[in-house]
Image (tube, rainbow over all chains, first blue to last red; front, side):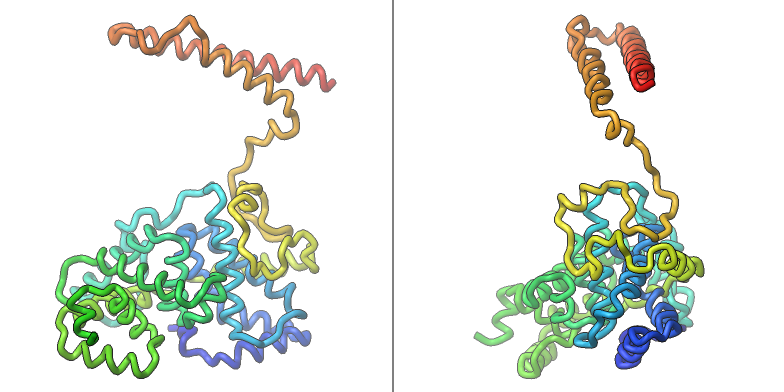
Length: 193
Length: 188
C-alpha cells in the first residue's frame, strides 16, 4: 500500500523539487510517482469525473514543470501542488459540463473502492455502506466545502494551508470544514458509533 | 459560562470545536476544556464519534491507479510546447471568475495537453454570424406562427397538432438547409 501524504517525508518533496529546478529530470518523474495518485483521487472527488480528473492531473504537473525556475520552498510542496489543482478544479467546475459524472450514482460498490483493510466480511460490507453514504453526501456539498474537507481530512493540510489554497481566511476554512463534516455525518446510515 | 452550558444551549461554535479537535486545530488550552467536557457529555461524545466515522470513511478510499499514459502525455506536451506559450496563468494560483470560465465552454485548457475525447461542435454560427441571424429569424417566425394556438387545441386533436409540429419542424429544417445552401453559394 502506498504511503499517505500525511506520513511522507515533507522535506523529500522539497529536495526533489529543488533538484528538478536545478536540472534533474528524474526528480520530476519521482514527484509524479509520489503525488499523481493522491492528486488524482482528490480531483476525482472534486470533479466527480474520472476523465476530467486525469486531464487536470496532467495540467497540474505541466504547470509544475514549467514553473520550476520560479519555485521557492517557502511552503510545503504539496500545498503548492494542491493549490494549483484546486484552482484548476474550481475553474473547471464553473464551466458547462460536457461529460456525465462517473460518481453520480453510488449504488455500485465499484464507485468507492476501499483499501484492503483485512476486515471481516460484515465489517467490510458496513464500511462499503458508509463509503456509499459519504460519497453520495460529498457530491452534494458546495465545491469549496468539498475542497476544504478533502484537503483537511484526506490530504492532511492545516487550516492555514487550506485558507491559502482557497484564497480565504482560516475562520472561513473552520466553517467550511465543519459544515461539510456535519452534512456528511447527518447522511450516515443509522447505527451506534 | 461553562463549556457544558454551551453544549446545553446547542451552541454551534462548540460543534465546530469538535471538528477542530479532530483536525488538530485547537489550541492546547481549549483542547483540554473540550476533552474535559467530552468526558461527561454523551451527546458531544457521540457527535465526535460520528465525525470520526466520516473522517475514517473518507480516508479509507483506495488510491486510484494512475494511467501510465499520463506521464507520457505530459512529456509529449512539453516537447510540443516547452515554455507553455498558451498558458494564461502559469502558476494557476488565481481562480478564474465565473465569466472567464464560461468564456471557454469547450476549449482546451492548455495547449499541449492531450485532451481525451470531448464532444465539440455547435461552433458553425461563430464563423457565420449572419447565417445564425437568418436561422434565428426562421425559427422565430416558425415558432410564433399566429395560425396555431397551442392553448386551444382540443385533446382529441392532439395527434393532429403533433403532426403539425412535425411538419413545422421539417419546414424549419428545410429552411435552414436552404439558408445554408444560399450561404454556400454566396461564399463561392
